[in-house]
Structure formats: C-alpha cells, structure tokens
Image (spheres, one colour):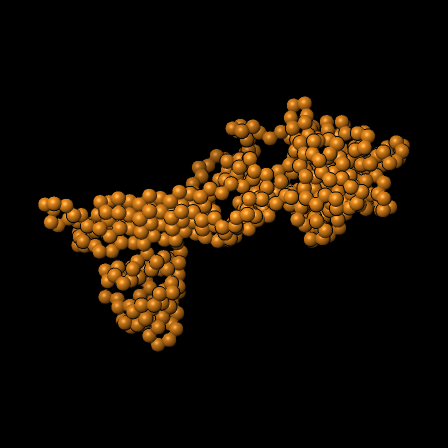
Length: 430
C-alpha cells in the first residue's frame, strides 16, 4: 500500500538557561561575574532522501522532538547547542507547516528547517556594566517552535498514464516495464499509483500508472481527488483511451471527460505535452484501428502523437517506447549549470524576521491591565520575576519599549496589576 499522506507533530529543542555565577578562587576576594550563555536548541530539519519511496514510516510515529541545549556554566563556559533532528522524506514530498508555509523537496539532499530551536539565555557576565559590576540575573532559554506538519507525497515520474477506469493503463504498464500491477476486468482495479521503469537504449524512464479518473474527480469524486496530485510532477502525459469500451460509451466523450478533469485540477496540466495511446487494438480490426487513429490525428493536430497499442499482442508498444524517449527531455546532470533566459545575476541574502515588536494594552478592570505582544511575551519568558534585580531589568525594558507610557495612557498607576504572557504581577516602575 502506498502511503502518500501523513500528519506529524514536530517540536524543536529549547534553549539552555544562562548561568548566574561569580568567579571564586584563592587570593581573588572580589571575583566578577563569570556565568556563561546557554546553548541554542536543536532544530527540526527535513531532508530529501532518495532511498525512501513513500511516507509509511510516519504512520508508526507521529511525534518528533529535537533535544534541548545545555545550560551555561561558571567560568564563562557556554552550553552546547542541541543537535538538529533530521527527518528524512522521499523525493516529491510537499511539506505544509502550521504557519502556512509550503516546501517542496524534490532533489536528493535538499534540506529545509521546519521548526527552529529556541534561543539560549545570556549568563550574568553579559549584564555586567561599569555601573553594575555584580549583576545577579541571568536569562532563561526560550522554547523551540512546535506545531503540526502535513506531508503529501507527489510521485516523481517522467510519464503519467491517465484515463478512465479499465482503459488498459495497468496492462500497458505491465507490458512495457517490469512492474506488476493488478490487472482485472472491472473498474478501479488499480487503487493506488504504480511505478514502472522503462529501460531504453541510453536512458531510463519512470512511468506512473495513475488510478482511473472519472467525471468530477477534481471535486473529489471516485479516486481521482487523492491521486490527481501525482500527475503534477510528471513531464509528459499518455492518455490511454479504450478503442472499444465494453459499456458502449463514446471514446470522444471519454477523452473530453479526462481532459476536463485534468484542466479543472490544475491549468498547468493542460499545457503538459501529451501522447494518445489507443488501447486494446486486438479487440477491433486493423482497418477500424487505423481509421480511429487517423480521425484522432486530425482532431488533435500534430502536437499530440497518436499510437495504436495492444498490451495483449504487443502491437505498437515499440513505437510508443521510442516516442516516449524522444518526447521526454533529459534532466540536467548534477552539477551542470542551468541556463536562465536573460536573468541578471544577483546576490541573494537570507533575512529572518525578528520577533514582533508590536503590542496592545487592555484595561480589564480597575487596577488590572493586560499587555499582549510577541516581543513582550518573550521578555517575560526569559526572566524570573521573583528576582528583584531581574524584575527591575524587565521594568526598564518595558519603559524603553513604550509599554509603560501606553499603560499610563490607559489609567495605570504604580502598584497596579499587569498580566503579560499569563503572568500577573505588581508593576512599580521606578
């Protein structure tokens, strides 16, 4: 069974706490602060691994947590960073993060950081100044990012076989490659995509047998809604059309139905190069098959190659194989430069957004206020408010951020209660 969907929960490691320490050794009566910083928490990194083929491993394990960093120590010893947690996924995996971002991993070795580890806290040595030579405060490490991640595998195939159920796609794949899909005389025999490798004289092609599509597949009818996504990665489509449907349906209408569903799912699919394989030619006379092929060539034009095929007798498969090798372009070799048309060369830099600096002040009752904002929440998480020196430091930061002024504009008076990040405390700004 092909597992092409998974939902997992990832947690990055928390940062280490800074150390509150003072230098103590013989004959040094006034040793200064020497607390080291905490390390940075381990991040959760997804890596594209060519040895994997589906998302089956995520069905057995849904929670992934990176290790936290070590705390700082005395003698200016900084804590070790937490090791990154590497999560390996097969090529073609699309990752949708909880923040709305989407990442496609298609090249083996490609990496993307989904959850960043928490920052480490600063030791008391970092707070020493000319006027505060013995600081008795240190920062706590911040927790790492966490959330639910949706994984979706879209098969990486050169050629995709599409068509109505029971059109002969599986038989065609079995005859052209060494794949062994289930073949039976009833619709929806194929319940999951099947891959096969076509061996050519100078190259190999990966062919995907996509489960049968029906009218309304792009809206979720039948099996198409789940498997249309696998068509997106292909570089050429082979529309397999039954020459003599057993239900007596019109091949022209059947062809239009599949093309409409592909276009409704993604307009890009309408522009993919195509071949038309008229299957089950052994069930009609040679004259009927040739007349049908000529009619389809006139209907589709010269851009779409039309081939009369029979998986039972092997007729037309050699010509189809040659046409596939000719139509599917070669991918550039690893390390080769890819020519970009008239694109100026620029230097790219990565800028990561800092913590949000905006905040809001709300008066809950007389003498009770609430402050919301990412930056102020991170400030409270870093410090122990039971420590008088740390509380004074926090009050100074709140004033420089403009929060004290905003509170006073709402009627705040020294000694009133203020709630920040779920912590209620009395604020006495000096």
